Image (cartoon, helix red, strand yellow):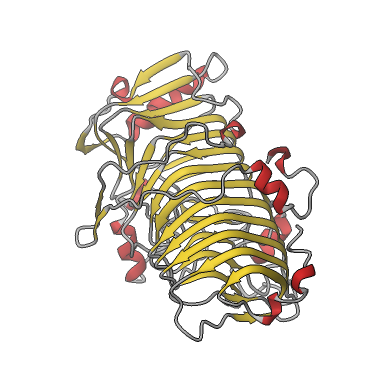
Length: 482
């Protein structure tokens, strides 16, 4: 995410560099061609509508949903409705107090079989509210939770310790619409209900440069474990849409995320300093990265040292005209490792895959595998970038250089690609161990020249011809046999 330009279980074991043979054995399919889904985005009214956005069929497909330790939605002992707490779903009445009363009451059943809060058909306006442990938020068919348009109902909270300040502004940040901290066993699911942040108000504050504190997310869970988010549509987030931070065992499956394509910094899903995260079968349209893996910002992320690791991103599709299908970084100071991205389908995007870092970040990006990516009408299909000069304050350390090593990219198809890949590492800290195999990028006009700086690696079966920095060893390449 560029703020000024909005844009695993034992599978890895002890491997530092995965074998393509192993990957192809474990990951049973090559490329998965998905139906190009058409949605309507009305930018003049900032309302997002969609009709029958299909998720890929999941029968007999690989899944990482076991990262959520219950495997499926658990049956809770106590089930109540928001109407039991005075909720009114007329699209006007504030339900903030109703949600607060509901969660406070149901918290008492956390150790007594758990609880479920049903949201029935209707339009339920609310300010921010917290979840609790051993709890399911269930949106019935036709249910829409609407974020309040009163900024006071999105209180300001402390910045994340791995960021040291709000990501956009100094000091604190607005809390997310749906929030939780220190929880265990949380489920957000339903019958394709919707959670709409009504973000236009917040986007206008950003565009007008009148924003006082960093915008809130639509959903943020902190320091939490065993999370399942499924079968819900998230719309019009003020900022990043789904943000698990300092979490583990997170499954985000069968989710649709929609925002106007010029809505600033509306990332889809951003796992941040989190481990054992499964993101699969999701459709995303946004004004920023569809998925971005993060782990803290400069010296604050370095000091906290909470990495993101063991993350699977599978069967995600969507479009973003300003950013990338999957981004690694740029906030990566706590380290990012063991990330598997497969069966990614991106169209009409600025980039398919982007690895982002900077001087001062420190940290590391290692053991990243991209397999079976399909792109159409993407400007730059693969991009490594640095040097955005984006730092939290003047105390960042220019000598804190990131280590980027072991990026494996294979079975990539691009149609109507506008430019050749751009691979820019850092002077004094080159990106090493780059391996590309079976990459076919069509549509790039002559001279179709790659731009490469401070990168080292190899490429086998890549077209158009890669830069010389990726042609070190020829036919005897370690990359061929990895």
